Image (tube, rainbow, N blue to C red; front, side):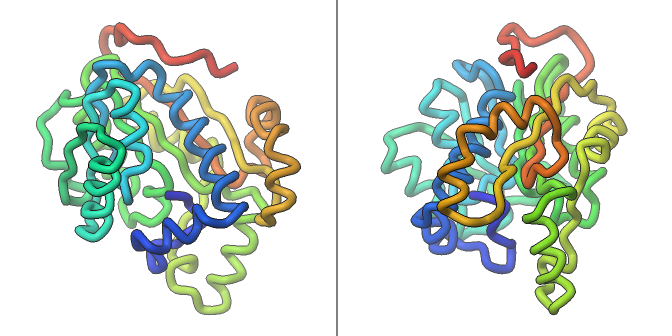
Amino acid sequence: MSGAIAPGQIGPKACEAWRATLLGRVTEAIEQRLVLELMGELRNARVLDAGCGDGALVCTAAARGAVATGFDPDPAMLAAARMRAAGAHVQAAFVEGRIEQIPFADASFDIVVATTVLCFLADASGAVREMARVLRPGGRLVLGELGRCSFWAMIRRVRGWRGAETWKAARFRTAGELRTLAESAGLSVTVIRGAVYYPPIGTLARVLAPFDPWLGRVTTFGAAFVALQALAAGDPPVRQPSPAG
């Protein structure tokens, strides 16, 4: 699910409608490719997708050999995620709950990922601490969030000013702010990348998408999506993350 869909609009049908558009297909593919790159090798890795939505990323991780768990507060989304996993013939677990109180023991996962989740939480710091808690020593946290300095963010702010409650409450973050959240939870930031530099127009997305990976390695300014990889303290994981420039 992409950050282009606000939580107040979210539901399995809204996610499918977004993916049915040219803008949605291009944008989600770019975001997911970046997140998967930062997650690194997935075979046999214990992966938690915190705020998994309808399970697109969980199913991809499971198909790549991960022991994948999706975690979300919305029962409808979890039902859609289970259907997606069944349709894709992959094994994944799905658990209902909130990121601020993750119902798993310390050091339960090799990789924890959360995309476009913190921007809608009142206590983002607490959520990151919880995700860090369930990471094993040397495990990886991957965060993907809505960038502050982008044309997309400007449009969302205007919608908030005009009364859209969800966007009024949303918190758009810079790369530096994401770094602070991770480091405050005791994690060591290794990579920060940007993505989605085009305006929210489908035809422009298709034309400009090939330039996105290059821009993401140069700057996060102008990125509608900012992704971070961080490591928990301790011995490094056996499966090293992919080089990210």
